[in-house]
Length: 272
Ligand code: DGL
Image 1 (tube, rainbow, N blue to C red):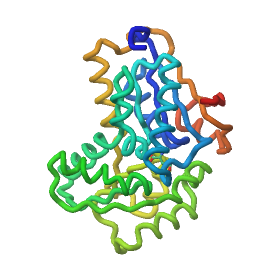
Image 2: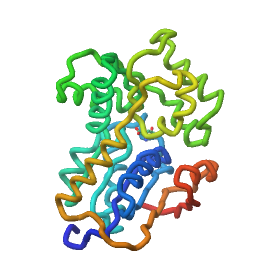
Image 3: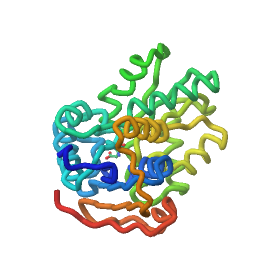
């Protein structure tokens, strides 16, 4: 497959649903010349409650679809897929494959360095929390403090529903965070692609100045550097293409999604 890709080939991005649009947004901002193909596996959402073998199987089928579309590199935007299936995808595919866990930890550690705040709370799906992928990565990157993790599965359907800034979403966030006390201090690492879409609700609960982060920006810069090294950055002056696929029709309110990209988004339904 690798032989068929060129610098103008698109970057493939997949997620279990619409949450990965939060990652695509950062990628698109960091690399304005690049073409992207996004796949949201809406039909099989959520990944966060499923076993490793099922998440791996689904992830491989998403990845193969994007490779068939000619992707020159693959971003596993989904944290759960990154936690449970990244090594297998990297071994199987012949194009560069990047996940979101390592960049997420880098982002949190940078923020920790800037703020002198050592208390880190990872919010993620059940699958990601149980895999301990974040805990292992923090250790690998030399962080010695105890990391707390909290599964927040209800936030996924709220994001898919488009309830980004909603009192119910705020109440759910409050409830998940209540075991950690009333004064929400520390760094909040959003370890699920859907949660950054709820940023306004998070800020209403945690305060405007809360230390909230995730890996999308670091990932975008690292992918850009990787493509530059492989001479795969798109230098063409053509207007770039953003193509959106999903494995079932989208129920959420598209105006909210359009606002993310300042353009009309339309998804084509595909059968993997
Ligand atoms: N997109 C998934 C993630 O980042 C969460 C949603 C799901 O459970 O499928 O982990």
